[in-house]
Length: 347
Image (cartoon, rainbow, N blue to C red; front, side, top):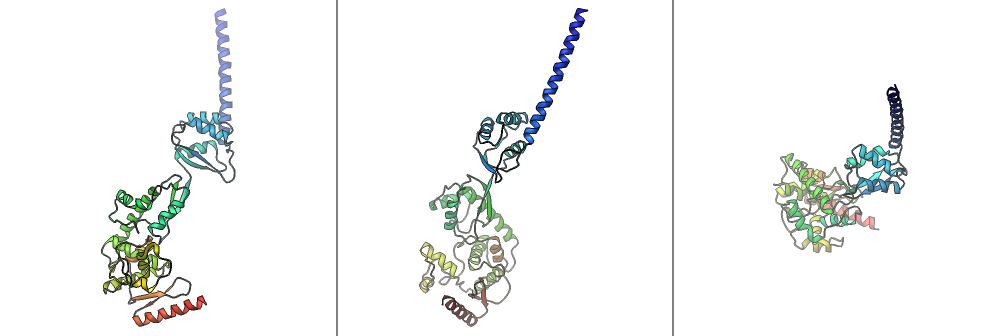
């Protein structure tokens, strides 16, 4: 009977202990659930948090607690391990937004939702301007000098010795620490894809013989106008001049040939000085693009507008528009009108 009584007491104690364990587990579960669903201590504008490569989650949770972002780094570490997320965190810089919960933070860390910055490559930049603006960007790691262009072109597989025109104007998004060469590689690939697509869809009237020639013509169009309603019309003028073996006589090519010595004042001496880019002294297209053309300019180069115009000149109206002419006499009259407006505006 005594054995039976002892066994009964053991069963009772075990039942009580099991009930207590269940109670403690329930309390702990409620506490953990409340913890992971309660927003972290983040200011309204959010907080940047950097995770260097190879950082253990114990260090991450400690830094989060030190900065006051979480109230319990140990509990966060335990929860991450229980969820099997502690070893899945990806390195990078993260913007933790106000209202983020610990559970959402772990999802952000493991999905690699890092903070992205932007860089806009502007239509019409030349390669010197492009490199200068890349070097000025605080979140882009600068690794290039002007002397590094040839080596970069070899790595990219470019067939041209000049970097001009090979990078597509676009807004690029990237994490902090991206190098200038990584961003240039992205812009190069995007230009290759864009140029291939536009070349495949080119109009029968396009006069250029290769995608690279299309890039050259597009770069001239890009420098001549920023107006969407004029690009294809200007392309039509250049197309007809090339077909008639007329010199293009476009100022932006002359300016490009002068190079870094150009002071902003285009003179008759510049127009008479022969360079590979002087389309007043040479027939055909220049040897390379003269700027980075956008997709719209590439499309225009391959879709010239119909018409008879062989000339155009700025109107001087202040809206970037041009006057198009069929004959040289009409063109000279338009030039005189432009010069008159220019003098009036100066006075």
